[in-house]
Length: 203
Ligand code: MG
Image (cartoon, rainbow, N blue to C red; front, side, top):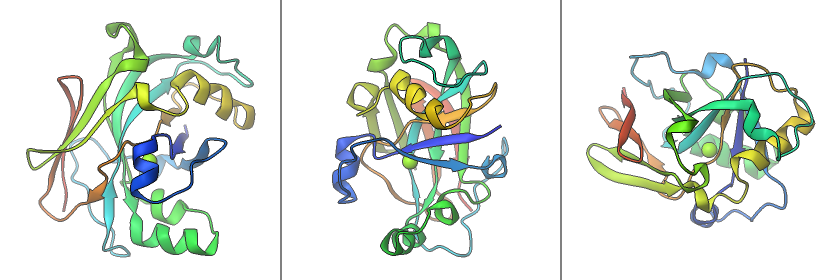
């Protein structure tokens, strides 16, 4: 399986990192080795002093597809989830400055937190979902999918032009504002609406 991530999909987050608003979705991949294993803590890698949390809505692909029209994209997923796109911001800044790919800052072991899955039919409108991240009981990120520049079905249309989507592939749909550094002993808890979908400890 592969993990396809969208960057810069919320205006408020683009502003906080002083990035330019993209004309097309920003796309990068994480390997399966980046998935944080269930019940395991997240270990800050030794090559970074500035790992940030980015809480994101996830979509799990349920059938093979290529060149999927956004009209039909809803047929390619049944489950919605929540995760963290951990990012070594210091390393990413160096790579960005040199125009180099981001993978070392985004695709390291443990950098993809994947919480519990929920059937999409539980929700009336996937384009109006509240989601949030608490760090040590403080609300640090709070988003709503209505604020995505590219909605889930548009993301599927776009990425499937480039990559064949396969069963079990996961899409990270981008983070809202409020990203920030994690340090040892932080506890991160993620929610869609009021349902808790993951709880992890940082080491
Ligand atoms: Mg992200």
